[in-house]
Every structure is written in C-alpha cells, then in structure tokens.
Length: 261
Image (cartoon, rainbow, N blue to C red; front, side, top):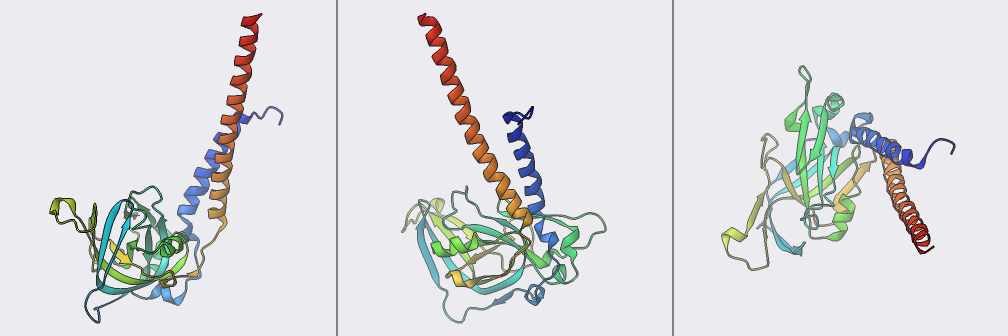
C-alpha cells in the first residue's frame, strides 16, 4: 500500500462513518414522493368496551399496559431509535418519530433538522422556517411480542409507515404483584398532538407484527454506506488489535531470547 500505513485506515473509516451517519440521520429530507397516507392526521378513537391490559416480564421487570385509546398513525419517519442499549429495550424496543399533514404535503420537513434522541424528539427550526409541531410526534413503541420488536426495529429514517395499536398507560415494577407505590414506575401516554415537553410523547402498544406496515422504503444509499463503514471499522479495529497483539508477542519472544543468550 506504499506509504499509506494501516494506522491511517481506521481514522479514515471513522470519518467516513461519521459523515455517512450524518447524512443518514437526515435521510427523511431526501424523500420526495410521499404517499397519500402521510397527509392524514392520526386516528384516535374511544375504546369500544372495557380497557385491555397487556403484561409481561421483560428485562428483569414486570410491565403492565392499560389501553386508553385506539390509535392508527401513518406518516414519514424522521427518526428511529432502536434502543439497543436501553435497560427497557425488551418492553419498549423503539422510538419512531413520524410527521404528517402539512409537514408532509408542503415539504416543510425538508428545511428542519429533526432528531429522535434519549426518548425525545427535537426540532431545530431556523428563524423564518415554518414547521407544524402538532403534526409530528415521537412514538414509544411498546409490546410484549418479540416479533413486534423485530418488525419495529426494521423501520429506518426516511421510511413511510403505518402503525396501529393503542395509546396506553404503562406501569413497571420489580415483579408481578408489587404493591409498594415507591417501587412502581408510571409511564402514561400523551393523548393529544398539541402538547410539548416532558410527557408529550405517545406510548403506543402494538400487539401483532402485521399491525406495523412499511408502506414505502426510504432512500437506501446513506443507510448502506453508514453500515458498510461501521462494519469495516469494527473489522479494521479487530484486525489492528490482532496485529498489535501478535507484534507484542514477537517482541517479547525476541527480548526473552536476547536475555537468555
């Protein structure tokens, strides 16, 4: 490789990964041909009967979800956090940021920087830029079904999706039957798109994987580029560690031989 040494490859891959990751996070801006479903408001309706209760043991805790409203949302995904490092990723496997309505029909999303991070979504709006905050939401997807977890984690930024389920109020506790209030965590869904700040996100329970529909995939170039760089960096780092270890063993063996002589 001439003067190009191996130690320069990892920084180059890291830089390429950062660059492609930046463009991948903005992938929703590259979407032009939106489906008619993305123009519709989410459909939130009263329950037909008594609330349903879903419960399961996940991540060393007992989770309980009580339905509050039926919920059906379609739109353009502006951010997806798959929460792989979260302590509750078995019960709430993803946060999906979705926009719709005028944000979609008028292309308002193209001039706004949107991010889903740390269980919230953030909009960076420059002065003079229009964006409807009441036509975008961060949806915490809750489930007790591993197949739903797998399906929701296949959603990527730039996809157009439909998600059906219920807005729910959740409780989490160390074990089933816990009654001590200080041991029970409460997580209630927002019931309006017009609120903001802490507690404004929707907690959406999805029962079956077929209740999540990827209507149309977003552009794939930057997503593929990011993951190619990521896997190449991991492989390169592993190779660097291996070569360093082999070199150290060789040097130690030479040093031992010199001492013996």
